[in-house]
Every structure is written in structure tokens, then in C-alpha cells.
Length: 168
Image (cartoon, rainbow, N blue to C red; front, side, top):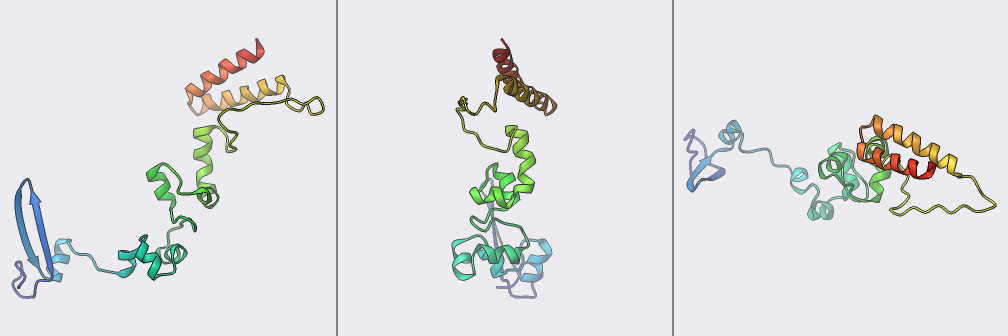
């Protein structure tokens, strides 16, 4: 079939459009398709990237990382852009891989970079009294200042209430 646009070359691209039930078909040669921006150069790398077959046929995620030039996690293949777009990291190794980029965001969201769990309980041993009530209040006041500075007002209110509870 000949190209419906230039009517000179053999059509290699078939385009079907269905807009509100109005169906149209067009047959274009590769040059006309490129001119209209509907056909891109085919490459096995772009076709198989981040797929099961890409990993099966190639050397896996580390090889794709080198070829694509995008820094990705060696374990799950997530890039920093993927993490930003999804709002979650791909795996535990992503925290180490993107530590320098993630740290400021984690501090803004959680206040600290060390995970202490949901229900924190402190036990004070007679032999080890490193964390006294005064130290705890001082630490909470610093956290309160940081929360206000970062405009995390709900966290600031909780910290304020905790400080009043300890001081009272």
C-alpha cells in the first residue's frame, strides 16, 4: 500500500484513531510518519528496558543503568524520579542508594532520619540515667522549634502538648 500523504513510498506505519466514535485510519511511509511525529526510531534497548524480557535478554538492571545513564537502584531498578513520582521507595536498598537526595525530604516529613517505631517507650535503668526528664524536654523544645520552622504545625502542637505534660 502506498503512503496516503506523499503517495510516493510504500506505507510502513498504520495509524488508527477513534475520537468520540469517529474512526479514521491512515497509512504513512516512515519519512511522513517521522515528519508528523507519530513514529520514533525503534531500538531494542528502549523496547525491552525495565521488562522481564529486557532482564532475560540483557545483563539485567545494572547493565540497563549503565546504558541509560540514569542512576538506578541495583536491587529493584528504581530511579530517584520513580521515587518522587510514586511517593515511595522501591526497596530497602533505595535508602542507601539515594541517601543524599532522600535525607532532606525524610527530615521534612518525619523530623528525624532514625526510625524509632510507632510506639516508643523509654526505660530508665538505675545504672544508666542518660536520658532524664530535663533532657527529654530540651530535646522536645528543639524539635518544636524545627517543626515551626518547617511549618509542620500539627507536629508542633503535639510536641507542645507533650512538653506541657512533662513540665506539669
